[in-house]
Image (tube, rainbow over all chains, first blue to last red; front, side, top):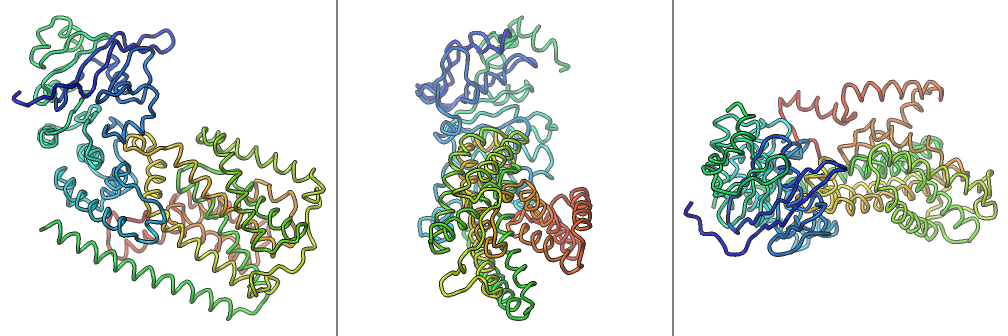
Amino acid sequence: MPTILGETPSVSARDIVKRYGGVTALNGVSLDVREGEIFGIIGPNGAGKSTLFDILCGITVPSSGSVRIMGREIAGIPSHIIARSGVARTFQRTAVFSESTVLENLLYGRHTSFRHGVMGRILGSISYMRDEQSFLSRVEEVLTLIGLAGERSRKAGVLAYGVQRRLAIGIALMADPKIMFLDEPAAGMNGRETTDFIALIRAIAPSRTILIVEHDMAVIRQLCGRALVVVDGKPVVIDEPNHVLRYPEVVSAYLGTEDD
Amino acid sequence: MVAKRQLSAMDKRISGQRALEAFYCACAAGGIAAFGLAFTDPFVVTLAGYTCAFALFALSINIILGGVGEVPLGQCLFFGIGSYGAAIGIGKLGLSFEVAVVAALVFAAVCAAIIGVITLRLTGAYFSIVSWGLTGVAMVAAANLDHITGGPLGLFGFPPITVGPLQLGNPQAYFFVTAAILLVSILFLVAVRRSPFGAAMDSVRQNPHLARAVGVDVARIRQKAFMLSAPFAALAGALSVPYTQIVTPDVFNVANTVDGLLMVLLGGARLVIGPVIGAAMFTLVPQIMNLDPNVKILAFSSMIILIMMLAPGGLHQIGVTLRDRLARKKDADYTR
């Protein structure tokens, strides 16, 4: 891929181990995701992908090992603080605020960048109004990008599943994050939705680092420069998506269990 | 260019909305004045005043229920703090009513800050049960601290209660004071709900995980909501004193909270004004229909069950649905 990648790793993990009681969910995972890279994490169900993901973005604390985001050790930092430093994540389930409209969903996504209190709202201070204006133009940008400009006043909960996933990306984009963690973003999408979705990720990728946990190998192949394969909590290989399929343990563990 | 045009269109919509809101406020103020002047039956006017006071309590409950999605069974604790604070202030310490109320509000907020740190670690039923438990503690304390609270008999025999030049013993004055405070509170809470803090509260209620992922400090928002709700409950408690003329440990009874909760559910938790509609229904309807208290409980319980089954958003949702049916509008936004 002809993308120019930065020298410093955006996300780097060393020897991550996670145990739940006697069960070892992750065992010795290390990785370096370079700035500007789209990095995939793949593996069969229950391989520990989601656990790894939660550890990388600071939601789950590893039993041992360390994670650095933009050079900073994240141990002990609450996840909302990590989020405020320009790290966004989407969720596989409950990806949107389903009772709110599309517009409100984006409004909730700006929390990080909008620092005004109740008094600012009541008094309508100048800085409040200015931020409100810049927020509104950001909303328009994001709505156009995710293709939901016509749906702004519809409730998120009534949108089609694939559309909700695009909205989830929109919520994450509101804070203009440097690093995005996408948890199975294309799960449950039909062919057309997946194609649109890949185009969307390509459109937002420049100037961002993106990590994707994904089941759909086609998505990983089209988007990612490199991918990590996790099997039974152990890292098998980090390589280009087309190359990882050449490793026999990947084929037997991952593809062997899949229909496609 | 397009964005700019859309922005100015949005500006127009916002200023139109502002005008509409100003109109609503004027209507509400007019309604309060008309009601206060038109009805001369002291009982009805006093009851209306008390309804306004209790509506504040329902608003307080809805800051937690509609705001961050917890069921605050212990909210009568702050109601009781307001009642006792006002009663002790004017009866024992000889303070003016205003000073006593302000002191009670501050005390309630401080208590909420301390209690919240402990109880807000819990969610769902656990939060509700522990909050409820604390009201039991308060009730025992109130019944036993004879020299402060008057013990099981409570506090009564207050000097005339005044706010500025207004005698709250006068039904009209009592009604105008509570109604004005209620109106200002509603305006304040509407502003809160529309502020970034209100957005953060709603995001926490709907999806705490996603809220955290967009940078919301979930624990802090819950704590702030709790601390915001307490003074409103205390205000309700204090303003009910001129009506009840007695404060007993029974203010800490959970039945008190349940009444407030019913008002919220009846009116609808989604809208700031929902609980106020509920409060009005809850007190005025049985009065007008002259219902026996036991029949009232039966009627309201059945009504709540029906509303929860058919329109979980409360009476307000029924209204919105009807309006949309008539206007043939789909996906209407009734969150605000």
